[in-house]
Amino acid sequence: MRRITYLTDCALAIFCILLWVPIASGQGTPYICYATYSPDSSHITHYHSGIFQTTASLQAISDGWENYLKKTYDISVNLNSVCHYLSNDPAAQRYAAQQVEQMWKGQKGEVVRVDWKYVPGQDTPPPPKPVASGTTLNCYCSAYFGPNGGENLAFSDSFEAPKGTDLNLVRDDFVKFVREKYSAKDANGGCSSEDKAKEAHNMRSKKIIETGWKPKTFPKAQPQSH
Image (cartoon, rainbow, N blue to C red; front, side, top):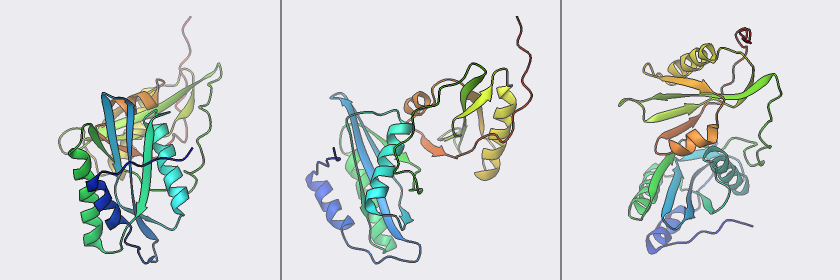
């Protein structure tokens, strides 16, 4: 079943701006994506990406955006998402992005700015979550950083760690990576074997960053006490 988009008068005006057909540049065509999630009538969340360029098809981008939201925010139903191409004119791009955000702010619900752009392969539905064996744990790491103490939330990929692994040492490697990659000297975080999607959903007011990081090696597992 394909996604359905409901357009208010304001949204219709924005839609007309977005449909100003661009001339593809060497870096691809500029796009923006947004979505509305309403698990019930009293809770509404609006998501929107920034502007990004890609040579991928609109179908692949739209599927990738929807898959990302479902995976990151643990959404299974009641999600309406859409992506549009933009004009190559930077002023028109900024205006369209501002109007999308203003449109959501004028309506009921929370607005979440998502740091996302299409990466090839995201249009493929994610595989089922891995089931840890008796000797490993499904883990992930996260780190908060920002000029005011934590506006950004960076996630690693999920990974399997041998039971008994000192996750504090894995955390140190991830935090070091985040500090270097994002020039975030204030970054701090941790690693957990809990539900990554749950943390992302609970902290959805922050700017979510999927880093793609995984530990290359693990510290030697500590002997299990009996």
